[in-house]
Length: 343
Image (cartoon, rainbow, N blue to C red):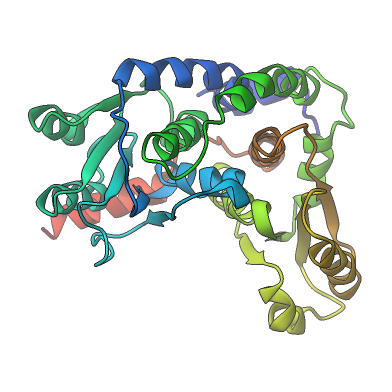
């Protein structure tokens, strides 16, 4: 099938994943309000910001670092494991992000951060993480329940940016966030199921069908490329990879024969430096038949979030084209059950 009309999407997406994606622009302002309600402490943290989280809960830290870019004043690092880096101590702010509040890796990092005397903030819907944080007097940023963790991307990204501001790792981007909400809402309307059949995400989804996407990023789009990869994995249940320029030009391009089921998708930021722009141009020629996607927007925040929105929508549309419900993650749930059974 190739139908991506409202009726077709509604029939294939009974859980409403597409609606959650399209709501991202509105979620930005709600996210700001929720951060304000948590009353984050302002502190001087030379050790910077450490964002602990897995899957969709953890990607906000990567996107925040990408958005800040050269404006970053202190380190911002993501941790996706049970152990904090050895250098994390009293001079760092640790943001523990778990949508469910029961992610065991994040809970382990929360406990370690407390034992080391680091300042902590939590973002979650509840669970053990919220309970432990409240018992320890740690600020909790509450997020709405009722959707898949990966659909909370707006909340996770805004929270990471606000925590970066709170600990001195970056300037406040509140004005950029608020200014981007309107233009992103306009894109959501244009790219939604009632928009043109030749809209960017619908065309991308059709191009991706039957191919294995390899999503290339550079600079600010590296984190977005990873987001595209994981959304294609979870929403459409297709194999996908991500790659980083310029590193991929030193290895990845050797693995591109003329006949290949892979499709290179190049996520380009027009504000990146000239050397990287040249590499995108030549990489597209080397891999052949690449899909080139340029970020659009008046600020780094808008450009990154617009690319996130585009990739999220393309992944849901691809799921519809493949006849797959984009909400369930059966393999992940089965894995968690197996893990729990072996404790």
